[in-house]
Image (cartoon, rainbow, N blue to C red; front, side, top):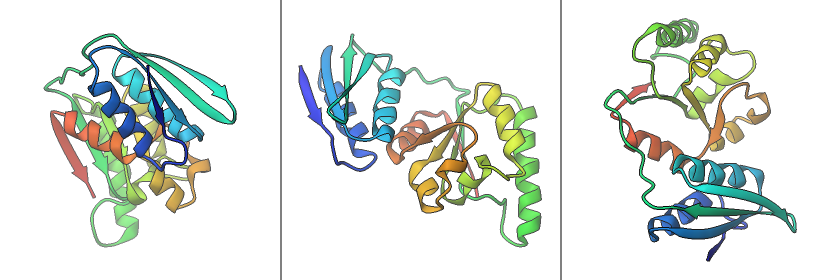
Length: 191
């Protein structure tokens, strides 16, 4: 069994090291050791997304994530897999008030359009859209209830110091964001 010591490593290094180790083996087990909740959640999510069995143990102020790979772990791409990347809390350039109205209208329209996106990724000030006080929050909540993954960049939430205000979705890392975009049949960038 391979052990990956990812204690003290910043996001997304624990996920990258774990994914590389899983790619190097056809089947078997690895243990990734991390020292923070975000890394624990991100590595666990990677294992789940790759359809691997996993369990998490809390030992000595660290998390030991035992992952069992049972063969090929690639996800199958659907031609309707659309990922929307939102990089701002306002749509377009110009007047902020207008940009706020347009973003609210855009997110509402996403709830009514078909097919719905597989995921909405929020980076930079886009993370403000899923936080308390956002005019677009109700629309993103509806998307989330429809099964759309809502992923907010953890670095961005930390930069704006709003991680505690997050209302829906998950905190992701850049590795996860790149993976979602690379596996999508179509990526729509909204700025």
